[in-house]
Image 1 (cartoon, rainbow, N blue to C red):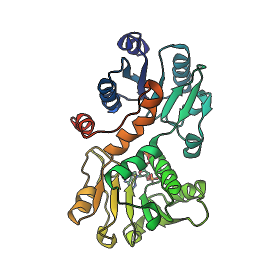
Image 2 (cartoon, rainbow, N blue to C red):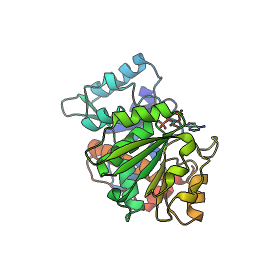
Image 3 (spheres, rainbow, N blue to C red):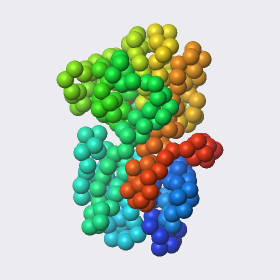
Length: 292
Ligand code: ATR
């Protein structure tokens, strides 16, 4: 795969999505859009890397020793396992406990970053500009890797009360402990059976579980107690319109799908590797969504 990537890059600066598998990743489409739009002579490819320490060590050595390699993105199952192979982990990635973006520094060392929290909040700002973090409670469903980034960004945004709900309650308790909020903020952990009741008075509901994803069961939740002014945000993006979003939309709630988060999380990496400041556009959304 390294030879293929180098041949595609043909001497140009490059980055890539690294995962196992990576065939279906949308990242080449989203970065390819920016490369073309900004007329950058660079490449963003795919790099399948097996989930073991030897393969991740080889990846890190390859990035360090290849002059035109600018870094990479990481997806499942590498976001946590890559960390010991990097030279430095920035504060945000350390707090979230996962790296989705690697940036090679001028001295050839590798810095791990996490742009998922940024992407989550940026997409929320763009798609629900009237939503204000400090006005009421937020309900987060799920407590996995994605939830960690979501909780970090909501705490930093100043949400006064976070209600964490996960099928495995213990995992949500651990998440709440890991993200001790600032004074005046609180984290409440609810059980999975309470998920509908906890919507009372919420300003935002976020689904970070895999429920609703293509091939998975839908999220079973009763929205009756959710205020009609609340925003409903599903970070699932295949399909774009999940059952949750369809149900929320039909009762008048503002909806945010997961594609915006995917697009916005790509911005900081692109800017670090290739230079220009980039923005997410409707045209890019269509291009990336085309074959979802
Ligand atoms: P990601 O990195 O995308 O967050 P993950 O770490 O595997 O993926 O987390 C998946 C989340 O979806 C978890 O919160 C998981 O709940 P558990 O902690 O109980 O496993 C949740 N999830 C997956 N399948 C579920 C189901 N059938 N019902 C409820 N929650 C489910």
